[in-house]
Image (tube, rainbow, N blue to C red):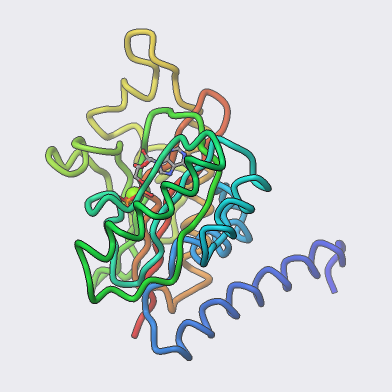
Length: 246
Ligand code: ADP
Ligand code: MG
């Protein structure tokens, strides 16, 4: 036993819980973890994510929103819908029970309309995080190099301009430093034209935590924290997706 038995015990529980979630998904023949499962696992790995609850009825969604605190965000939870907002499956800034209830119906209707065959697990409820500069951390496996992490700024900068950096897992501190600084949009993170600067040290640590996490879980094939809100103080993942090896 190490010098800190309590810490060791906590570490072990965390590991078990992540293995449990991965194990039960595999048993069900699923390779996609939903947002609720993905965030549970990441939270245990010390990666900050929004609090989140799965609701399977309108009443549950309202109760969850009250418990987590308004304003709330509702999102469709389905293994068949990977880009939730593309189909109208994300409702932001819900300020009352009424708005949460209405959003529940809208999100369900949108899913049925756009993807009638999708298996719907329910709706996730989470608190609305204060908007900030959006960054992305992704993991993919390269045939030759194994797990590779990607870093970039959210939205069109990644999708259209491919302004991203890559490093092979495990990352060194130096890798994390460089990854953030070598994207073209780095000045945005430093606080461009009065915009809130990002907490670069937190982002570096986040990259290292993700690298650690990926190294510990070889059964994870792909991962996306998209977006992470980067604040002056700290950062929080508001969306997360984990795909397992089949
Ligand atoms: P998608 O499956 O379309 O990627 P996201 O969960 O990323 O869905 O939600 C779409 C957008 O909504 C995000 O890029 C982010 O700007 C915003 N968003 C999502 N969750 C929250 C939240 N908890 N608080 C504030 N904004 C959020
Ligand atoms: Mg997203």
